[in-house]
Image (tube, rainbow, N blue to C red; front, side, top):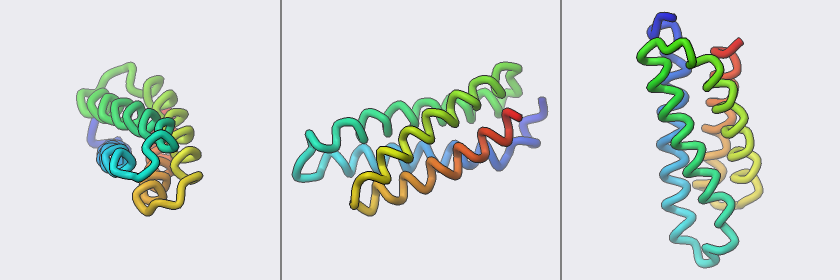
Length: 109
């Protein structure tokens, strides 16, 4: 596996991780933090998955396709949760998660 072949997926994963970290931090500043607990949890999980997927692709790991399939599932779950909230940071995160899921699914195919 050549890492440059997956540059768009690596970028999508990096962008998604950043969006998820930003969303989690912003959710922690919301008035009703308890209502955002699942969103924060999924944001943190998704950011970790995305960073690991990008790392595996960058190093050309044979395990990258399988990990990217799982990353796509986590991204979709995070996108669904974020889409339930009206906050702009959640909406932007949902969009980044959907884009990343599509790239990861394409990469893993």
